Image 1 (cartoon, one colour):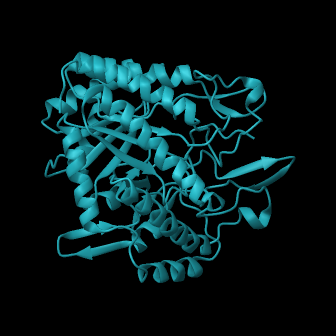
Image 2: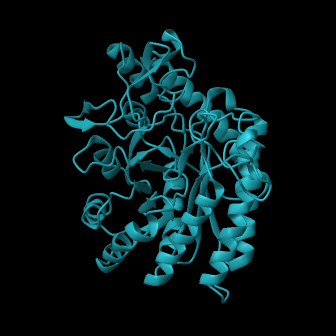
Length: 404
């Protein structure tokens, strides 16, 4: 079954504020006990690492660097392996090299990894053959199998997500050390009990230490909601996704709420407009935010606004649509004289067949061959390189003279 509409799903109350996209935990006391246990665990990342990423993103905001953010739509516990982690690390690294060589700007690599175990959904339930069960919300909440036991939200999965993230981070740090490279982690800060349990008070302030960068999604970015309130309270770099319905006033209000001190690198806006809307919806946001004196990082998510359903029933994306949204994103920034900060894409280092097209074209008939995503379709390694070469071309055109 395809879950495609935009109705709110799973609205609850957290800290007296509305919290969208929260699971209906059947055992609240077990959830609180698990959160209490996690609050006593070591943090997954360090405050100093978060601060260093803020500095790197400040360079992106100033037009002195580029952000490349990518990884799985939704990580799975079964996907925690040396091979899969290495594939994502090296794919992002090779993409970064292609882009950096073309424009002579450093590339900040941030993975959707080591914590991207939760996914927002359009509906709280799914029906198949007359049977209705809770929708799959990611391995941190429930299982993907269409089974009553698997689909029941289980707080013990929060601990599994923590330990899986720790394992992935150990692998990433080993790769980064071997290659003398910087690599950062990020995920959507969706399940608030998990995020709050891994938040720590320090002498410098409050940090969410489940990842270096956390973002708030299009479905949870309400100004009066618990997710934006959480993001406003931590010192990490944070991001917000903006869809085609976002207004300049909303963007300005988010700047005031999340970056009142106007610290470059603190706030990133991830535009997920869709190829058909980006040229019309994005210019007003960028122009008015820039005119206000704010300096967020602007990033293009060319994936989420371009979903289609194949005749086979598979959710997919056409690479041509992905590329067109990237080109439109660059055209907007070039027309305004602002810096196109980078991209945020769902991709993998594996030879999957989930998105259509690309130089080594995936055809509709190929989709069932290796359709392995837990949720939304990802670019495979070849398509990721197609994206990297497109970015290299557009950055070289935007900055014909060496910038480093």
